[in-house]
Length: 373
Image (cartoon, rainbow, N blue to C red; front, side):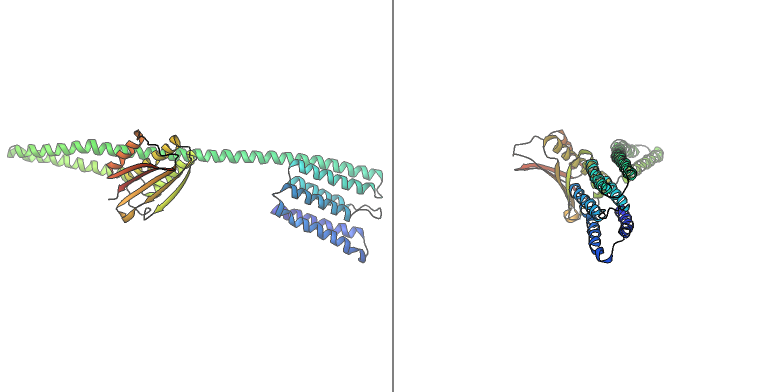
């Protein structure tokens, strides 16, 4: 918009001098004022049709015709301000239009200015000077247009590379964060299932040994049992600390799914109902739900021609957290539950949940739930 007002200011500066140079009587001024008004009226339409090069081309051609007709040397006296006005219209054509339209505008402007110079009282030297000026202006505008197009192309490529770089950087950060989350969950499970169980078994055996040993050894066995209890408590605190670092809840799940959507060029429609945002999901539960949704979307990409899916989250009554993935599917053929769906089912059942997979006429649906503690 700033460029438009700059062109307007330049035209507004030149035209009063052009009209004043004519030195017309008062009774002839209305005709010229009408021509100038029509020129500026068309100029005000430029922002409205700027996106349409054909209409803008005809508008600028009309302005050249109006300027040539208004400042034509009817009394053989050439108006030098016509050179500036035609130059401004030519420059605006090269600035706002593609190169081929700009060249056409320049040719029409050069023709109008040449006709005006030939039918005026200018001598041959001045006419040749005007022709040389128009030629150099034409060459300069073509060079400017090509340079501008190259710069715009470079800027577009730079923006594309910058966007790709940011996307790769975000993807790397998200993958690193997801890898850390998976690693923390695996370590927590390993500590809980391996070390924790063994320490619990050791405490039980020490208690059995304490009941069977003599009074002299009971105090020593009790101290060993206390040490084992303290180790078990430290292990539980470590597991709790690892799980506390996980981002739980639906917002974390949505953030991960959005990244998955961008990476796989899918269109996912979310529907959040019945207090799903406020559901108190733990980090482990969030991780299981995300993995289940990820597996369902992977099945969509592998076994379906659709690139879109509908995902619904809800927590009815605050006792369970439900999710459903629905994608278009043709036919009602029976499906076979593969490794991915069986792993999804096992993960949900480990969290006191369940999975239901079925196919209807037109849709394939994966529905699961987890009980909220």
